Length: 284
Ligand code: KIV
Image (cartoon, rainbow, N blue to C red; front, side):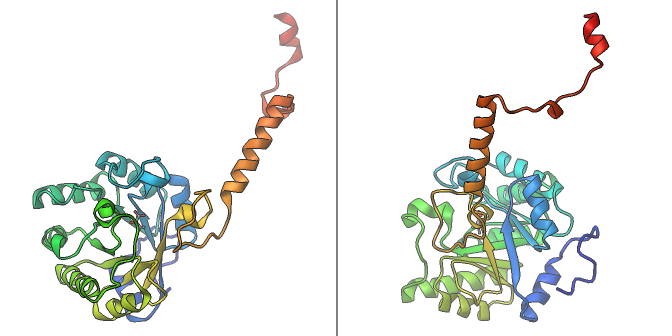
């Protein structure tokens, strides 16, 4: 990527650079991170966009959906991720009902991601229905990423994770939503569980990068939940994900080995505790 700076210098990716990547056909890689050490790994790897997704409700906090996730939880994790990054642009995911009730609420909560969380942008779900809020947030100087297709905060309305845009009416609505977000000033749009040909069409129709998750290769970029990619969510691999590692197996076997060494009295070894002058011991 032509960044205009060396990766590792204290310089952040800008939304202008992401727009340039779209224009030049350079694929944009985005990953979620929820804590400091993971953010460091992702940033060091040169991933330009890090999403502190409200998926943390499920993959970190054990909730059934993203609905219970609070602003406080999101800010706490966003702050940790921001501390772990130098170059990536950090996007904080606005939780359920923090941008729906009023423009004032949307502005106040979006601002907290930058002021308290150290993020550079926010993401929110929805199209035409949230466009007005998006316009106000953008006008206040906060970059906004949109999110269309399957929108997890509407999971109870949608009936769980499912493809969006398979019928003529729903495909037309997706296009209208994407145009509304584009016009409202978003700097990119996540497309989740959208048929690949429709995602390709949307990508050609909007001026900003589309970032796909289960939406085919023709989006301008891709995003994955890092726990899926690393094989941390042991029992479940979503259809849109590819496991690049199986860390759950490694973690299980490391814990089992530790437990068996402690039980057998083989851990700790002498080198795991401080030494002491034997003379002092004799004086006690
Ligand atoms: O919360 C999240 O991680 C997301 C991605 C799946 C795009 O919204």
